[in-house]
Image (cartoon, rainbow, N blue to C red):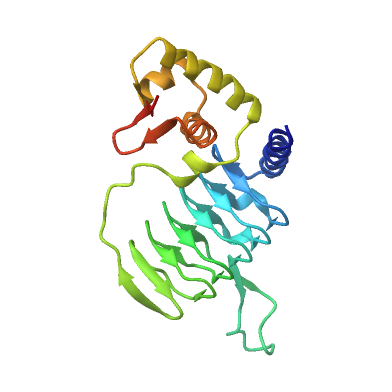
Length: 235
């Protein structure tokens, strides 16, 4: 019961944070996790896709525009700035009164490590990884692993089948209880293996993949084969 209550609290706190940003003008997709102590100034310029995770103590002033596309993961203590001071102003030192606004775009399936700072105008390409403690002053190509001040590896392009957050996002424990009863009934009336598509037919909520993961995690006789997309019962 303790785990059930703690999961329920986590789920509803996250929903409250997401819904507050939507009311302030942000565009946010499904299955998004925004952790504690995250700050989004000017959220009306914020766009977040599906299955995105943002860790604790994140900060961004979104006034220049911030887009975080589907499936991206941002670890804790990260900062993203979408504007800078105009240091080329002739009349003032060390910088002028005007600001320069430049949108930041984090494309699909990016992983950003702990304590990363991203400058205005940066575009981080699909499937890229930014190493912990890195400052990112320039755009990063697709599939690159960027750490310190250089690209240290180019990852091979491959098909992305599942977003991590589609599987491991915070879940509604009431949904999981309902799902568990239905999937066990399905196995009682079928063979030892059931496909994901068959499970989806009986449970139409968008977080079905998350439910499969949690169900198998809590019921060790059941295992999910993600490559072949079926759940297997071992007894």
